[in-house]
Image 1 (cartoon, helix red, strand yellow):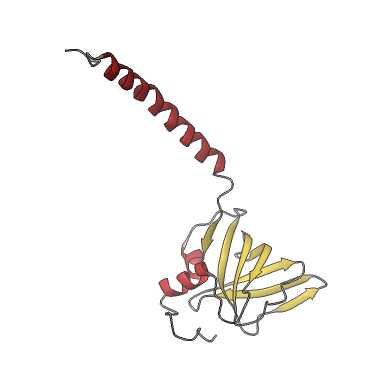
Image 2: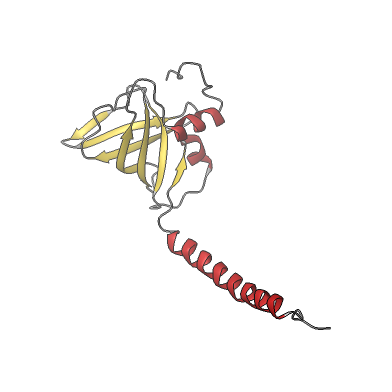
Length: 156
């Protein structure tokens, strides 16, 4: 039994594929390994409550700003609660909030969970008009059965 094809053309093609496939697989593997630190996962408050998220891992948390939860602890220090109707997470943020940030509206915050279960945000992204809901937030609310397309947003 012969491993290589008899034809010189087929043999060259076989050798090229035999060399190129591992090189391609290694380059894809190395690229994915290098990007592992750049991936930011999105969670809704209910998903975050059910998940084992490592303390200090950078993630995105999205939902609605809970009514009556926004407070300022000092200049540039803000605390508010993000909810999806099933669970709520307390968020602390140092800096200026976006102009469109307000209670009852969709928000996505990026940061990390602390050992006490609170979330320290490094970035706050608010909606940009009256009808916009971040896709991740809308999808999370739909998965939790809290909102369906065409219906008004849930009241807190």
